[in-house]
Image 1 (cartoon, one colour):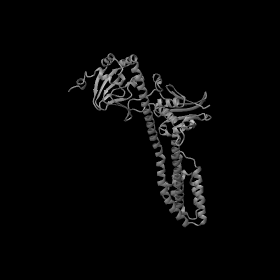
Image 2: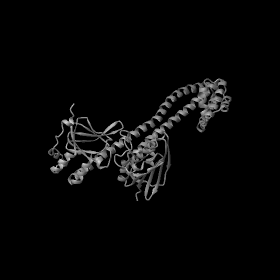
Image 3: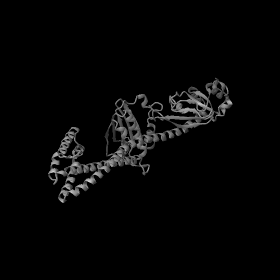
Image 4: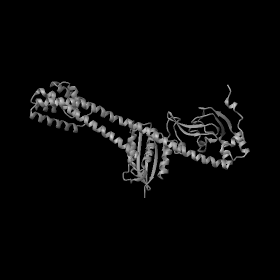
Length: 473
């Protein structure tokens, strides 16, 4: 089988290379030097030219065809750029000092490519001012485009993470509401039937007694403290035995509700003594248990609905919905909204300690973007401790700045990495394992948008990100 590279070899000449706008002004001798320094190859449609994570040891001159640049994020590939013929590509990682390509290049159509080693590329830049100027201008434009795509992607991925966590958080109270509503419907039917039966059997005095009994039982339930499991079990046995001794059917089913409401056998004795008919004790106790169950279910629905309402409000506060982009904000509000949104990850085993200086003034800020910073920092801290450990959030005033510290007790960031973590596209994660640290986006928000500062201090057991935001004078 013939090698396509061999079949197409020796087809490149200086006239073909001069058609690339970047090299249009170069003399023939320099063009011939480029051909001699480079390696000519072909790629068929769909063929991978370079993989994400490969060594960034060449730049590429695309003579024919179209190349697509993609980055793997989780199980998806995000398109970063598409390069047409007669252009240079692959220069960004080289000029940014990256050791590996942070994206993959693959042929869309049949491609004719000249690969140029890094050493030859740097020599070309140093010897040809016109080439250097054009490459740097092109690099700046491409870097801005890729960073814009990266920023939007980071926001979308973060939104997806938050949405997944929020869905989980909303599912619990929603499920509790649905379950309580179903049980409440059954309880109301039982209660209506018993109420009608007792009203027909008892006179006005007995009905008045039952009304007082109802109020007293609900009041006791409201003030009742939760018992430890052993005490709860012992009292349920006592009440169940009492009910059985007085001919109350299914007493073992009624006992947990009665004990949970703070009712004991002395209270039950008083009920029995005030009933005109001893045979009515079963209906009265069953009626009381239904009333207490109804009250408990209504309380559950109220708490679940309140939880849903707070989650919705947290999302609204987090996104600063219906508010101007630049406004006076309290950093604590944004941090608390973020913690609520991330609660699904925190509750797995993260202990959060808040050390807030509540006297801090409001600052002029882009609230939604600032919350993205808190999200990135807190989410990274949770990942650093694998969801089990300590997280401290501290606020204070420092030299006319608000200082926010996010601290975790994870393994720390190696010193050789600390100087790179705010660089574009830098990540400590493997190919396809995640979206990176999101710290370059945080840097741009804090430093670029808010004229603040963000730093990291790290050693094993103590990693702290410090965000300083100016207080308006």
